[in-house]
Image: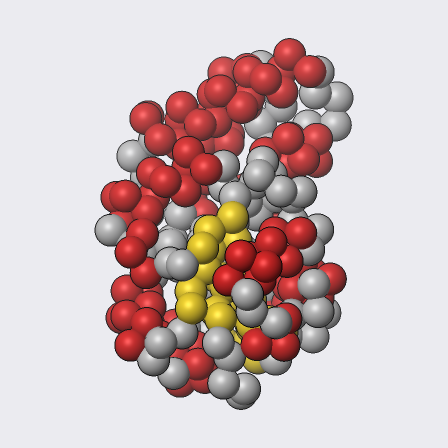
Length: 215
């Protein structure tokens, strides 16, 4: 594995075990708005996308008014109502601390809105690890490469000196589009077979394995 200067992480399903909370919040919001409640797998498949694009994929006949209501309800359910636990994955804090000690630059590229990322960084106490963050709504949604390119520009890092770590096809497709290397993790939303399609440099089953590659 190369000695990368910048490690860019997805958040949900990569550093934080928040997938169950996202799924249940989306289902609750759909019920309140009066839309057909999506399946668990269909919600997992849109994690990482910006919410407007996710809604279009989940609800084929959604109206503009329903989309606005879903945006409000989903955020309310996720932040205020839903108490499904969303701990950091084992060894996440240790991994980031060790990378920081190695003077690596760290960043987040997430499908969360800024409000949602600010919330989870606060409750997890992880904000101080990151040199840059990009959220949905600030740039085009994954898998568009703009999110990664803007992080590279901000930190003045060449694409060949960065690597993207994520759990979904959207993460790895975004890295591929930005000509950035990637590593897939299997403990989030997509399995090894799905991740392999995007030719990551490695696929790992734990953050301990990831640390062995990067530190």
